[in-house]
Image (cartoon, rainbow, N blue to C red):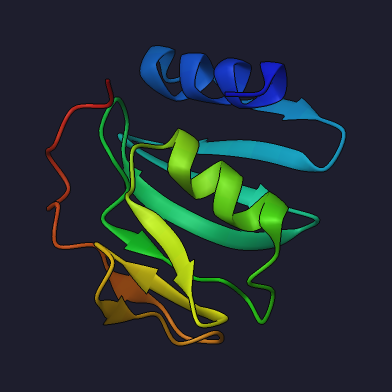
Length: 106
């Protein structure tokens, strides 16, 4: 995990906003959102794995890395982004992670 990702996860666990370079954590009540280059890529309950993700048109290494840091088993198979190695992730739509909104971040 990169340093920026470790700080991002620590901020989410603590329920505190965070901004560094291209990554931002926004806190709203008991929920958080992660932005990458200004695009919303993840939403969840503070301290938990995100319940929803969106690649925002960019299945880049950076996007995939940020989502993996949040505890999601996301990968690329045959150039197609997948969740849990099988579910194809649409590139421009919100997707439920199947983790629920109450799965603690590790």
